[in-house]
Length: 506
Image (cartoon, rainbow, N blue to C red; front, side):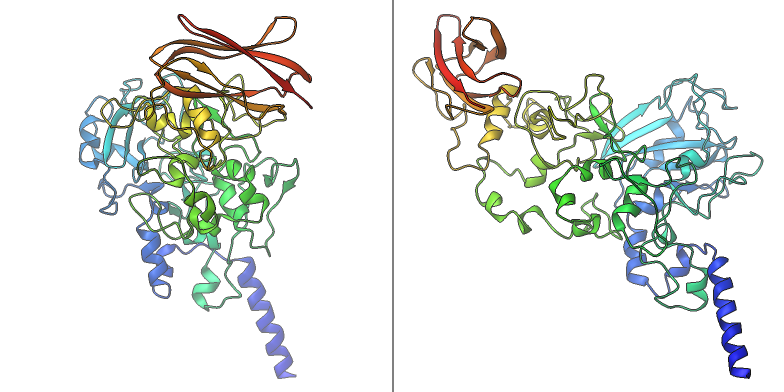
């Protein structure tokens, strides 16, 4: 009888502990999990938001070259001290924003500080280079640091209460930054009696302001958190997206940051069962020469790595994970190089834009599946600087070269062979459906037009209309929106014209 009472009491106590588990903070994990704790402490996750205490600046790992000693000198109108700052958003890898003691981002409307609109409220940096101050938000926009902002920057976020004394209604959190319990759930029971059964391997949860209750997995279905599940994609996707739905949001000609989940959903990697931790160690950093990548492209794509028609020291990710997204700043002169690597992977070797007409999202429909444009995969390097010893290229040139990048039949680069005369070659393949390559040779730099017209003489496409360098050139023609039939393509330069036929068969 006594044993039965003890069993019942134990079950009751364990149930009560499970119901009332609380967040205990990452430092409580350090004793038993010292290696993982050290890796995490040296990563970017703990520094997504730093609460300022005793008017002292946050402390970052030594690898993070963030120019912190200049922040208070140049923030806003230059009059601020750390006594004005309640918290710092970021500061580890890309940018830093500053929350005033009134709960507003300094420099935005509503702030009790007088320097709103000064243009100096976000500091951008990347890879050891300072990219200067910008105005994060127009001066007439109110930016309070509440749950809607910090839900992805902190651990144990809640819409109730307030994290900042004297400012009501902001919401609360248990720990600044992304701590151990952001991914493994509240740890009070585990700390009291360590066991694999009383801590989550993967903590699936939905944000309190998530109106759909979960994540759109790209097929229109909404997946909700499973308290017994261990879907690491769901966990990472909870914060590495911007709207819980599938559009890959973009702005200003770049994919927005926090969109890795939406990008990944469109890839064959996801469709073939990859998860985020197939390639990432979640406890380690990837930037600042971190060791967070556990599997490289060559691990699976040895054939592609062995056959690449590209000179120089370009790596797989330089082309297939270019900086097509932006957190803080655009780098270089090409206009196609941000500071966040894309996770789209696939490159569509055409000259079309990768974005929708209004530039608000990556295009992903029957006309063009989500894919990188050679503008970002190629021109991010090939037009980035005049003194980098990388030859400048046009979009037509890099699009054509991308088609045969991993083929044994690639056309020699234009800067290696200089033809003696103008030549328009027969397209290949021919007949074709729906794409074909048109090759031509130029003996010197000149204005070039390559157009396609039908049997009635009506122009159906202008593939090139620009000045090109001497050499062998190629351009890709996509006839997916045209009917089957005979077509003609014409090369026109300053003193040369040539026309050839091609057959589209669908």
